[in-house]
Length: 165
Length: 165
Image 1: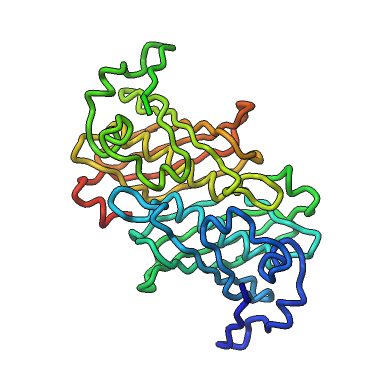
Image 2 (image 1 turned 90 degrees about the horizontal axis):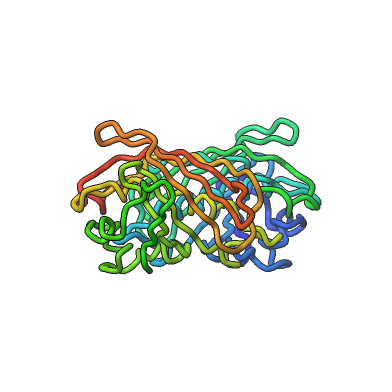
């Protein structure tokens, strides 16, 4: 899974910047560590990040295994994707010995979603000390926003990750 | 998958009451329709419901496929389980030609969760016309609450389910 550099705006990190970063998030993105199993289950894919701006773009593959009887993607899995969009927005900005703990997640469901590729865009809205306010949205193939979320998260030492939410 | 009658308090629906109900939710619970694929992915299992009280108890199997690198269940999947707890609390109370649309979901993550069986308890807190306020919680093997959620949902005609969130 190669990180892709986005050229628009010139603000996205260059490939060399991204390859030079390490830590639990970047090691997965750069292939130095396996993709976390939860991320693989959601068909997670890193597209691009702007560490200075605190933004990230990712993608998911909504499979038929995520659908309700009408064939739509159950909102449960859209919430899961949003969790795995806003968290990485913060993770991408952290030091190698840091991790993040998502304290809450508030999701609004806007449109039905069909199986297929879903784009997630996340952003660190504000970081104050170890607390961060995050936001994210999901868009489907037609570019319309399917769902959006806000979250509060805490930056924690990586060594505390197993005991954190 | 047999629905289990809970005897405590005498308020849970009897087996015959539950078997007599139909509609998209009860047909799945009673084996007359396949379990929705999204529910199967989460290891969803119906335990009991009290339709008069608007409460439901369900279970999920958090698999290793839901874990982050520390081995904890990613909050993404806890949010998904809460979605699939609060929705069924309302669904269980509906007429056969009705369905529900979850408009938002607000989750708070309280404790780390390990893979295994997770119990979900959901409740219709208040229904006013076609709008319902829902709440739910997840508990792990030790009985401690892992995460809790509130949600707003709308009761919709079953025929509109495919175009609803």
